[in-house]
Image (cartoon, rainbow over all chains, first blue to last red):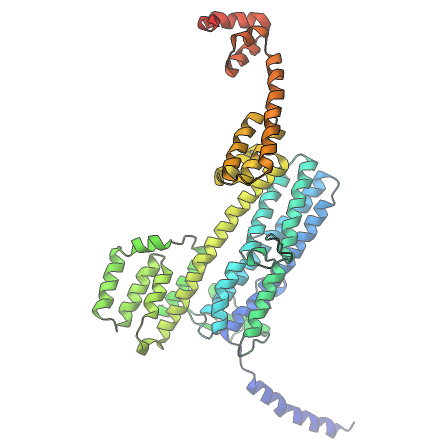
Length: 244
Length: 241
């Protein structure tokens, strides 16, 4: 192809790109907070959104508990349960419990933003309420795991692990504690699958539509001393003013 | 550094999110209405209901008492003319969110307490852990299912006498539970079966005297007749039987 054709095409692309840039608006502050729950935030492992981290940790918990259930001696069983606890409830490493609470908090931040839609405002307290089942199971897993750690009997430890397994499985895909025939039919039965679906349904109702928020916005939202949320034009990665 | 009032409200929200663990009941909010801060703020607003600062003052007073629903009500009652005021809107958003927070923290606390109860119930029913049974029944004394599990655990520990008490209590609480009668019969049978064995293990002299369990333990503590004789010397009144 002739070099002139290249230049001509390039010249054509410049205004098109400029036009796209002109019509691309920054996301709303509310949507950036939602983005922290869904897509990414600068303080989590691999900068993943809190819900993603919670889902991943719930899967890791389940995997480790399954490992414990298959163990043939008490030390191996205990070490697998220790791994499960670390994924389930860990302040330093975003356990299921911490990640989910942070996700709910960020939905609440979204709801208090001045540009939040009625849809987000209505959803925030519902979501906070609906995470209780998973949080309760996290607490239950912690308590039973302590019993496993203190156990000197393999038979007792296996019984405890079977119970932990049920709770860890329910934290992934819900349970049927109300015996309706289907898992997760009420908030008390919710696991991460149902919470994700609830969040996605809220996103689908957004008007104007929610679009995946670009990392620059996700990592550079800061709170001014006045309480206003703004984007840090110096791109300091959201590290100023302690916003998490 | 000057922080706007809207900013203060957002900070209040954030700190509440991080640390608030107590939420007052509607009755405690009724009681809070008698607080001087609320009475004064109410009076200030009544003097000039169009004054937004006075309205914010009353909303703040309710919020300080932890009564966020009342704060929302005060802000929502602002005259139509003021409803577009940006500070009013910020405060209303935050106050509404804090109403949600009350429920949130209540639910988290309840989840924690329920997890403890569930763990005790599990240990009771599966591992026959009598301490866990006792703790679960202490938390929910009127729960027939827990009482039955406690009694079942006592049966497994060969303590039918105590099991019978719990079965009877469960039966009174849930008379429609058909299997309690069967369990009760089994406990009574176990008790009867254990009683002759216990009596057989008691030295004949002590058995004849019909001692209480603690007395019998003293009798067992030594070596046969010598101990019994010693004991009877110490307690001559007991010999009258």
